[in-house]
Amino acid sequence: MTFSLGPIPMKTPFILAPMAGCTDLPFRLLCTEHGAGLCYSEMIDCHGLVSQQQDCLELLRTNVAEQPVAMQLYGSDPGMMGEAAAILAEHPIACIDINMGCPMEKIIRKGAGAALMKNPLLAEKIITSVCNNSTKPVTVKIRSGWNQHTITAPEIAKIAEGAGAQAIAIHARTWTDGFTGPIDHGVIRQTMESVSIPVIANGDITSHEQGLALLKKIGCAGVMIGRAALGAPWIFSGAVNQHPSMAYRIKALLRHLELAEAHLAPEPSLSKIRNHAWKYFRGTTNGAAIRKQIDATTTYPELKAFIHNLAERMFRQ
Ligand SMILES: Cc1cc2nc3c(=O)[nH]c(=O)nc-3n(C[C@H](O)[C@H](O)[C@H](O)COP(=O)(O)O)c2cc1C
Image (cartoon, rainbow, N blue to C red; front, side, top):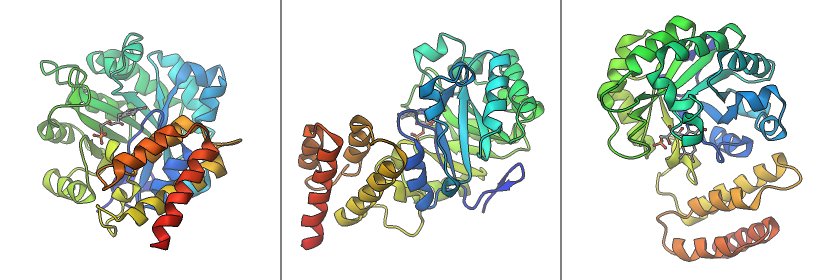
């Protein structure tokens, strides 16, 4: 039960969603190791990429072991988005994604992200420009619409297909819904009916089983998981108990630290890793106490020592 992204066959329909501040190279590698079929990068500002800003260039870090990887661009200027796509297309990545779902005020104010869901003409110009400047397949990540009165996902998906996009990922909520409220499977179905390219469903998938059930229920090509993968990369694996033991969690976190050290020179950012580490202990006995100790660490080496200590005590038992 897999699909192809243009010429690229997916090994599994389970996909890691783009998440700013979270889906960096180490986390994507970890999710790939646990079976994710495709991982999306954090969103990259097209202006920052074209003007070679250091923080944007750092987001381009990739590695052959994480293939296939998708890198996501955001912006509202078709020319700039095209230029940024041409730069990205030179990188060893599988595909380029266009962000049409971000609800953040600073993005919306510039007419980018979810604001494009109420501006089909500009959306079309942007997708056309990105597709014309990319030798890689292009995907578009959309929402259901701007609000419940303007459900534009089927229309925008059709426009995207016409402009050359190879797949659509839909977070089935509107801009006004933000990140809460029910996911609208009806809009995903309507979007699937409006196009012949693969449609990937996103929003509130909290377990591997739920992903499989959704694939079966609505027949979408893939399922994209965001928040539920944080601190739980095993969600991509059908072979792992979705409520793993403390020992399993700590082992996964240690691997996360190892990948972060290998790929984030000179050392991983404490706040980012602390944020990830915290999530490995969600819903566990003693989780609250462990998280408190994680929060109390003030340097990366201190955090690492704490986790190693925890592991030693755990594996001695
Ligand atoms: C911390 C965080 C950062 C996010 N950053 C992005 C982003 O950079 N680009 C994007 O298209 N969506 C972004 N999203 C939205 C997710 O990709 C996803 O659509 C949303 O979280 C719903 O899926 P979920 O319920 O599986 O988390 C972000 C979400 C979160 C929680």
